[in-house]
Image (tube, rainbow, N blue to C red; front, side):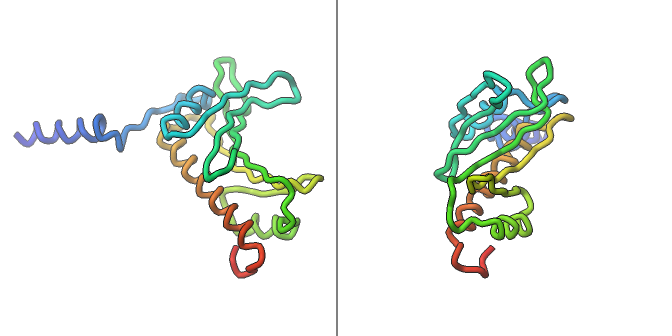
Length: 166
């Protein structure tokens, strides 16, 4: 009887409950379609944009926390697996985001770096190396971390006048 209950509980956890189900991704990285499925399964849009020339980059456009963000794919193998991905969000020039604030962000926030381009647009990026494999659960955790970063960016921008908040 105990064995039957064990099998039933294991079946619920792995199947119907779905909580601990994690699919391994093969060595070599992740495909655009795999990443799009993970986003879609979480309820987020996933618009795939394939580079048309050397000046363009293959990416997925999505949104969270009220902001559009992009996931760039790098180091493609012949079978369409990208070794690396980069989550990226940018904001048009914001007067409170200066070089000094950029340094402040990079000093205090571990998972995403920020920089300004020549036209004072701010870019916030988080990289992930997937060359030696990962799981859908690990990617899901990365996305949750990224959404947390976006939330922190919003707070960082809105706390511009309070120097005690970083």
